[in-house]
Image (cartoon, rainbow, N blue to C red; front, side, top):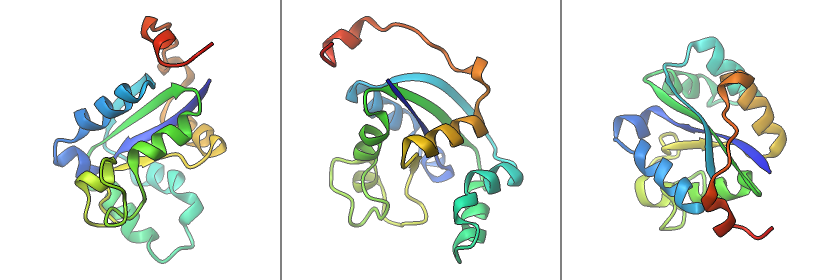
Length: 150
């Protein structure tokens, strides 16, 4: 079982798309194990986006992600990282496939609704930034036996 970090960005929160993001990930068959709404402090935002600190878009990214509340989540399931990325769609919403979150709701690469970890290693690092171990809930979901074999 894999866990991944997902964040509905300020544009997604302001546009009322939190429920849409959650619904699509639930319908995909993933299990929500952590959820909170927060206004990111600058220090947390910089830690989260540290891999991009030397990129020219970093200052604007930090301004944007701290401009309003975000919804931080942890999702669990087989190949959860890849499953979430498929539901989200390409980073650039204009090239994202219709039927994906970004393809259906985005127009701007800077305001693309949602963030999802790009690897298991990134997921572990990002989950640790936003959640304490006791904030994540482990539970059995009877429906799981109808989503995957084994």
